[in-house]
Length: 213
Image (cartoon, rainbow, N blue to C red; front, side):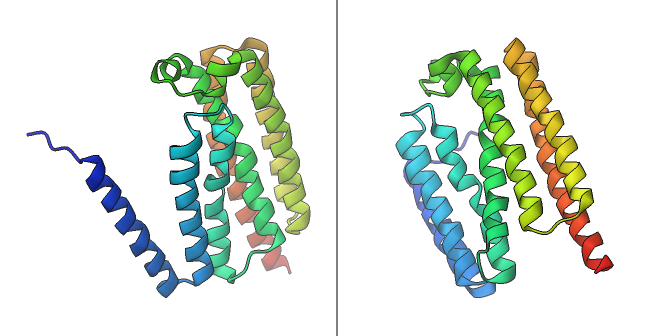
């Protein structure tokens, strides 16, 4: 037997879940973390999904503004404040989002076109999308190096950021040269590995540094 969730019931569930999440975070963590999480939720639903996803090729860039907030939520949950390292950590996720998702959009460009979603590969073509991916990747690597300096991380993180960043730039440059689906998916898979390993390097470096101190 097939069951369906009506749009009205889905909306009601989402609103209730958002309210419960805000109250729960406020009571068990702090108000700042709850407010940031709720703001990101509202931005993603109202501004990105409802307002801009089907209206601009920059939808992923704008949506990334919501996707990078969880980093701030986590920082606020632990410290009760938002400091410069938290903003740069959030900027890493923000800069990572477009090159990460545009590779997937290049692979499924025809599907997005049929669905009427103006993703960049649909509107501006694969060559311009690949160029934007390369530019954002360079920006991403620059931000990761800035974060290491501001967060006072050590040599382990610096080397990891350089090596992983060089690999990402290589993937982006290769995609710019070829612009085919297979290379796009290779860059997509690398982007996931990249972010996981980068954050792992942050954690290990901070642990080693704190013990050494």
